[in-house]
Amino acid sequence: MPTQVNQNLMLYNYLTSVTALTTEVGHSSGTPRIFGPPLGIPAGITAPCKFLIFGDDGGAASPDVPVADVRITCYCYGATQSEAQSVFRALHAALHRAWDKRITLATGSVAVLRSANKETGPVDMPEPELGWPRVVCAYRVRFCEWTFAS
Amino acid sequence: MRVTVRVEANIRTKEILAAGQGFAQDFARELGELTARYARENVAPGVGPGPHPHRPPPFREHQDTGELQRSIQVAQEDRGFLKTARVFTDLEYGLYLEAGWTSQAGRHFRYPWLMPAAMQAQQEMAGIARSTARRWLSGEGRTYAGRQNVNAPLSGTAWPE
Image (tube, rainbow over all chains, first blue to last red):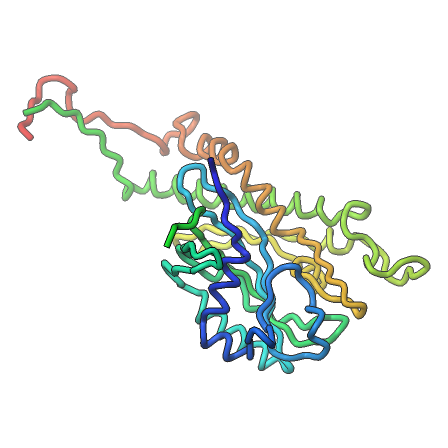
């Protein structure tokens, strides 16, 4: 039976395991700064600062190869446009050309990020109503459709 | 030992090269124009996001004029071995509709209109490829494309391999 992993959870677990990225945005369990869906400014953030939100745009399924191919849109925020761009660079270093990354889930099973590439961006797109500095980009990420027992 | 008939397509011949490049550019153009058509449908007045979505009545300063729909363009590019068609708009708010924004009240809005159009056009790729290939690569009515030459008799040669 075809399966589909929770790609948002997998990507979140992977991004929060990259020390350079978590250091750049100041992410910790007590001070989250990396967020998955839903999109929009998270409730605990009330002023421009460094944080990252990603959203799942879906993608076509392969009929023959058990790899899920999805497009992820990422929103990099900062107190200034320059800070937002530095968040993007840290994200890019973590995600672009990532290959064969093993991600351990809470259940103990192992998911596999096969490859990731930047598809578009970065685009300087400040929030038009709030005025918050923001950089938008999209990545094509491929996961194995199922997880493996560790 | 076996008997072989070898069929060769020399892609360096001018005819096949020209026909292949023409096919690729035409194919990209057709897909681009189909994408633009679907994108214009996505943002058509009455279909698209309409007046500023988080401004309830009686606010009417944002009108759906159809300007975004009219601004969608297709341009062809020849980037060497990449035959390309670009579908784009010069209006900045088209980009914000596509990527999303957050309102003062904290609600996030997003109205992807271009990427879904491209994905919808991609589903018709096989049919477009077939019809474009028929125009460029068949021998019907053309004396210079798809020419076949038989340079040796089919019988009589057993070549040890």
